[in-house]
Length: 289
Image (cartoon, rainbow, N blue to C red):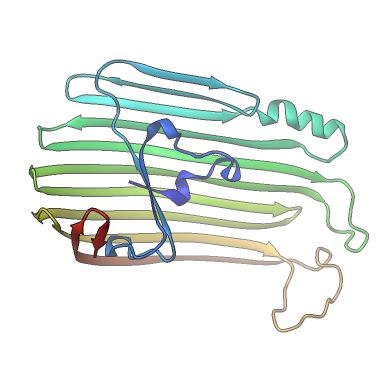
């Protein structure tokens, strides 16, 4: 299971970080979901990645005017298999020079790349280990050659950068045909930077997540679910921007011509949790939590 907020990221949402060929399922919960999603509000999109194929070597290569991508999966032995993939955009190779020659002020067109790597091993017929790594990096740079007449200091280089990486481990055990115990642990970092001239806003978030989930089928229509969960986020943020008054709507002059104020901050937040529920399914079209 991965977070859909990170799964759809490359090129501002133009394409997903995890290609559709790697997906096992996409579940949409508009509301009334169970406590295992207790940290979320509103609707949820739950994305799961499938296991690598066990039979033989498989590969995929695709190249178009937007990007190129490659995916390979194969068994290493009877109990171990892998799957890797990657993509890189071509927009900077042809769109950037075309826009720059037209005088638009683009020094580099949007550039994005993403990657995925997984190895899976069957410890026994009931237990499987998985190690998954994936990430994405998006960037764009502009040159503002024509200052605004109302704000002459507004100009120079502008850029936007977003990136993240995640490493996730999972142990999936089925002691009996009615019990499934899944434990996951992940670490990752998300970075965002926006800059215009000497102004910038930088945010970094390093997150650690762990979860252990047990599901037991007590009867054909009754399933018990319980688990523990922990999330720890460490953030580092800084910005250099003109002073802003949130108590007044009056314009005091050109925004970008004012002295800049620099601020930095660090912090951490730990959120442990636990959950339990019964899932009742008296009819095929009705589920009660």
